[in-house]
Amino acid sequence: MPGTLTSKRHVVADDADAVEFCHAQGWTDGLPVIPPTPDRVRAMLEAVRLDAQHAVTSIAHRAVTLTAEKVAINAVLAGCKPEYMPVVLAAIEGIGDPAWGYHGPGTSTGGAAVLIVVNGPVARDLDINAGDNLFGPGWRANATIGRAVRLVMRNVCGSRPGTLDRATLGHPGRLSYVIAENEGDSPWPPLHVERGFRPDQSAVTIMAAEAPHQFYNQLSNTAEGILTTLCDDMRISGNVVGQPEYLVILAGEHTRTMAQEGWTKAQIRQFIFDHTHNSLAHLKQTHRLAGAVQPGDEARLRPLVESPDDVLVIAAGGAAGAFSAYIPGWGSKRSSRAVTKEVRP
Amino acid sequence: MTELLDPTAEGAPQALSYAPRVASLTGKRLALVDNTKFNSDRLLQKIGDILRSQHGVGETHLWRKQTASVPIDEATIAEIRKTCDVMIAGIGD
Image (tube, rainbow over all chains, first blue to last red; front, side, top):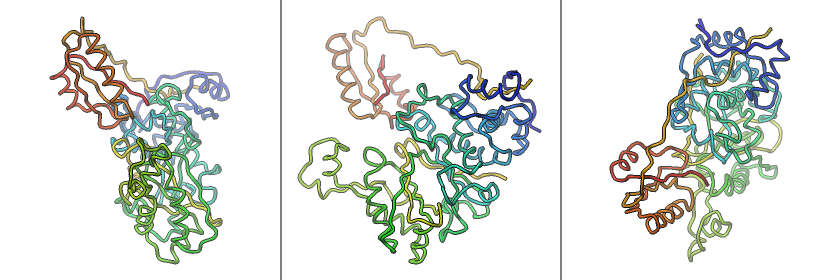
């Protein structure tokens, strides 16, 4: 079914040699890889019933077509199981979407990673972590799906650090930045349903994103109290004057407080929008905006994002602990927006 | 023996060439393409001023990209082709 594999072939003595060979070729992210043998690559393609030459997507500015074969090879390198391939493919479709705008997140000094939020049955089927240690290690699917995407960016699109990829700092999410929404314990409609899919469909939402910022509130037992702390953290975040989109991740304790008071995601978004404005005076005094402070600048307010809809909200993280998190996106809306792609079974 | 498949792009190389250089800037219409980064317009205008006063450039026109992280759009390129002879564009922070 996969058809002919046309990639250039290299021969090495054994698997151990192969790992060193892959490092030497510059194909890795620094961690050991699984050698991409033809059998392993075929297994990846068979899992998604695709011909090797099927064009998954293309990156116009890089003049490159991402074939199923190249995605499969990089998924093997990353340590994916074949059943992860539908999620990897959906994420690759995401980074090829002009609205996501590969050119910026794939090259910018801003150093965004590809944040991937998985929704729907596939997250449970593949054991994609939505709970304890949400952004930490320990789950193969979380660790390898995002790694496969980053290796495709490196090996196929050419986003190599120091050359096309000019991230000044980057962050650890660039190894893999995959989470699932905790739909089972969430009082809210899942993210992919908010973005137009059915609950029984699976989908990935892709956002160019900075690192997660954790915040703590164990004092308040009200939604407003918790969100006030969040907003105070968020207000000055995401580089110069904020980022175009944010993902807010509410973990177990905070989610239960919100649910007890009946807060909807829309109310949460609106509260965050309303309470993250900065005065022009503050932005100028802290050298985030150019120019001298003018009379009245204390009262002139600039919202962190253009609209409440620019704050994506999910339930995820451990059940215990009064922690939640927010993640600034990257760039501008004209440069990159979060996109959601179906994971086809 | 282990056989490995190459994970990198293997597209056929594309032939690219530079536009022909102009023999002289005298009287030429210069397009300046601002990439929207802070102060890039001021820097380009300064370059334009120097080229006008010291190298005989006839006139300068400033264009602005939509945003720094996307290429200049085709409509603007077409407009620049019609109205200018040479162009200076740059990227960077």
